[in-house]
Image 1 (cartoon, helix red, strand yellow):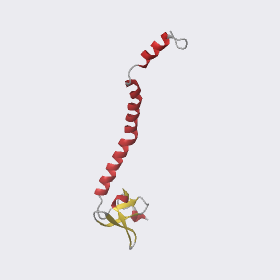
Image 2: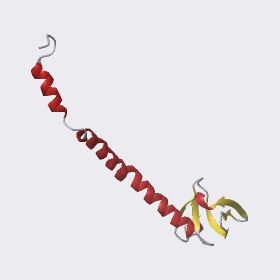
Image 3: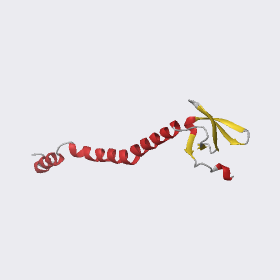
Image 4: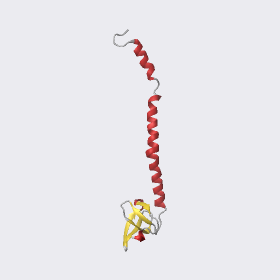
Length: 109
């Protein structure tokens, strides 16, 4: 018999630890929460933006990530020529188109 640790306490602590699976449950739950709150919505947003960029066509009214609003005058594989004012055309990378505006939005300015 030990003077510092009683035999009863030593036996009880080994039985209380159990298997290692109980330690993994909080980690799995944390991963599931991160997946549904962070990863999945971001993947959905990326998929929607990719569909938007692929569907662009001449004459669409768009807003870029830089805040420029204009009408697409010419479009190719990587770049769009966007008219932001009369006779002012800027060359914008297709991936930098943030959103599509409803037709006629820019005519009211």
